[in-house]
Image (cartoon, rainbow, N blue to C red):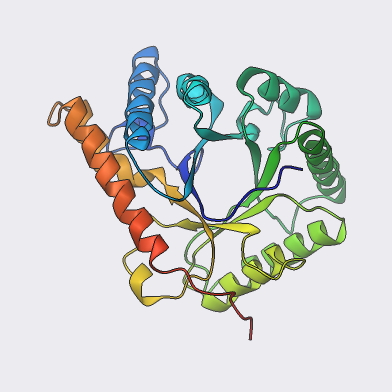
Length: 285
């Protein structure tokens, strides 16, 4: 499987956000006009990224349905891409089969694939085994084609009072590891439970002396990054940080060039803050 360097910033335009809807309701674009607007919004984000100078590797983390044009453009511009392949699912499971993954590889040729995982204690054993088999197949495809693979674990930000869900997520991650599943990166989130966060970081880096086997998603409403030790190298910035500018553009309160500069400034601010808060390996007490 592809080996990635440290210090990566992922800009999340996948199913973690509906920012490309460009409206207050954040409803997923459905009509042709809404999809066109989403496409224009995505292209403004791409133009802003082109203007940023940073030592970090930047990755556009996209879903193919709304980001098709910028996925093609990114390849021409030599910008790194991640495609969240669960959006092409044709059945009840979020994890696609090998045929769908190969189709995405042929069309977009991304640097990495990602699949979002929901750990559920009520899931049947058969469904769990099928999910594990499909993930192993995706990892085999990634290895064969020198691509990376991200397992993005989904859960909310408020976890301190949700003991059952925390236990389910930890057990689910442990089962994957015991099954020999080793993605290039694990996607995790900052929550209000620091011990839980550190536990997932430790599991993600169980074979690694560093903290570079996972990506931490930063909440778009995060206000306390300066006061907390993050202890990681790789981060996902939720596309929600662009919402205000894109809504202003869609309601004709901002011009295109203003929006691009606003997005650039916003991203640079987040990247600078993350860069100044890197610390050494997190210790799990």
